[in-house]
Length: 117
Image 1: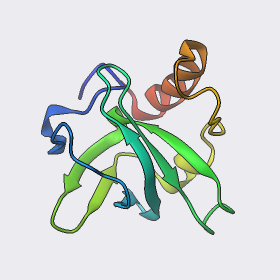
Image 2: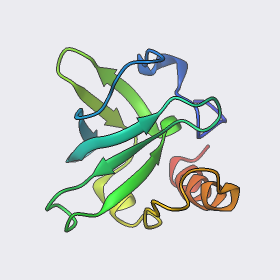
Image 3: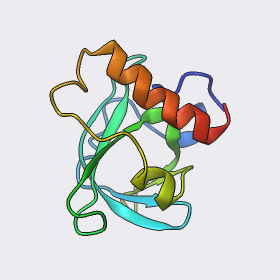
Image 4: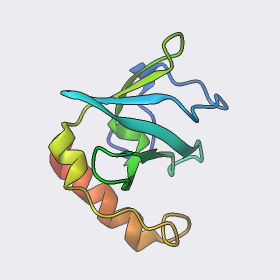
């Protein structure tokens, strides 16, 4: 497991530059939504997931380090988190998720604590 929560794990099957928009996202206990946008930026890679009706249209920011595997053929991304861990995550802030180190620290800290890195 990578120490960098904002980088894809080497075993995830992620290919730099791949468009993951629209991929379904699966928690360890079921589907949570679809990728709305994503970034491959070094040390700042993430997915923004639209949870749809599951948690009333909430968007969540998932650091790339939470991705356990990507199935390109099925267009599914598997994350090493439960639905409750994602549901209880810090609220996605579209104005802070780019360039706000404090916000990234808060979100990264939450997921690091819940992944046991």
